[in-house]
Amino acid sequence: MLKLDGINKIFNEGTPDEKIALADINLHLKPGDFVTIIGSNGAGKSTMMNMISGALTPDFGTVLIDGNNVTGLPEYKRSHYIGRVFQDPMAGTAPTMTIEENLALAYSRNKRRGIRVGVDKKRREFFKESLAMLGLNLESRLSAKVGLLSGGERQALSLLMATFTKPSILLLDEHTAALDPSRAELITRITKHLVEKDHLTTLMVTHNMQQALDLGNRLIMMDKGQIILEVGEDRKHELTIPDLMAEFERIRGEKMNSDRALLG
Ligand SMILES: Nc1ncnc2c1ncn2[C@@H]1O[C@H](COP(=O)(O)OP(=O)(O)OP(=O)(O)O)[C@@H](O)[C@H]1O
Image 1 (tube, protein in one colour):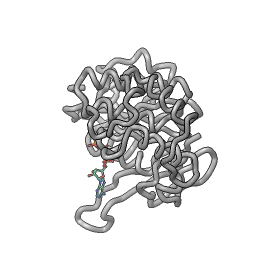
Image 2 (tube, rainbow, N blue to C red):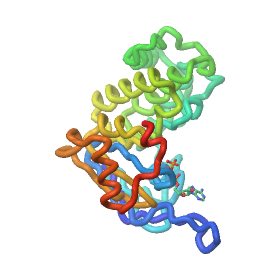
Image 3 (cartoon, rainbow, N blue to C red):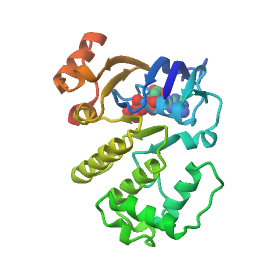
């Protein structure tokens, strides 16, 4: 489903600002895997997500999605494989367009056809049914401008737009981090529901260690551009936050340095 093979990325190579962002990343996801990713600041989590989405190209290594080598494909040419939700609720939707227009745009983009914003009756019913699943009554506000929605509502809409065409890979990049706790919990619940409903293969970056333990069937920990710990289904649900901290200390020989992780 997703295979990262020997991925390396160095920024500003050969300059005083050189930064090894990813150092030989190997990761293989089976269909339906839901992997949570934790790691200290600057560990390479977002860079890895950007390699998968095509926003960045690796210096070495290959990215395979559904068995296709997409390493050299730009972002727009692999967008039909990928659904992505960012931390910023404003990032995934167009504020001056209506809810229906946003959904129509996401629908046609991911269907590999040209962008068509027109909506027939059948499509509208599908949008309404999909929106109703969110439990936010957005299905009765199809013609409302998205800019009028709250951050949580927009993030729920982004999540729906990223998932309703069943992408091969769903990338969630700290998508609950900018929300207040009750909204974050709502978005977490909706995420779980949408991912389970369609068995979506998912990668989720989070600084909230409890969330990383609670969600998904696998967990990886990154540090300094490497995957330093992988936890599978068998162990994941018995682990605690202190266990994860202790694992980091055992592997790295120093305490984990991430205030956000500790607070989370
Ligand atoms: N475009 C870039 N140019 C130069 N350096 C970069 C660039 N993007 C990322 N980096 C550096 O690469 C390293 C990995 O960054 P990345 O954003 O992937 O980390 P992260 O794990 O997502 O961190 P955080 O949790 O703080 O968001 C960092 O040291 C960062 O400063």
